[in-house]
Image: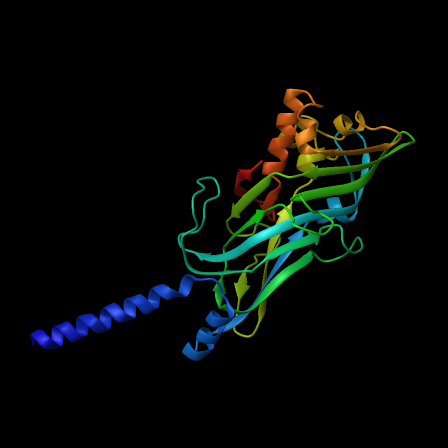
Length: 282
């Protein structure tokens, strides 16, 4: 009886260890293991969305009509989770998940890519993601080593018009951030992967946090915290302004600069769902 109990205990421990191995990144090795172990899988797409603010343009809280030529963001460690319990962005902390999958490498995308009706930009996909509901998402915005956003995590390139005046602007940010959000909040639920089917998750970026929105009441918190475009227009020379966030510390008053920093650290969402956000480096 004693030998039998030891054997049963050993089998139980082995099963427990095997069960704990399902939470790693979905690398090629992991994909092979999923296939060998008979785990049901599908495809999970990761998309980045600047919404209609970016694709169609909008009017800032102070009356500037803004359009964008390019908005480059540099994404790393994009990770989806089957969180249990569901992640609470207000509490923050690490996501507790039974399963997680992540994109390898660094991905620079242009949120202004395509026409007014373009789909959110495809950042990457995992073809053999274990089935289930991916109800949490995290990513970092890091400085690019090369390409159009080199040395920055975010580059905003656009035009602003008001009262017959046009200003070309480029705003660059070298601050690095991490965003962690729970389930996507929107008109439809997202993150469901079914066997041999494709699900998707979305990283959403709210640029009205920077410029405000004339379509919202002036006393709405969005507009009271957003710098608007007027502070940037005041820096223009010969109809142009190109500036980094670091340079703006000495060019803007303290309140406006602090509001700008707040708008950038709260830029990332999951649909309308807020993220826990943090500054990694400045």
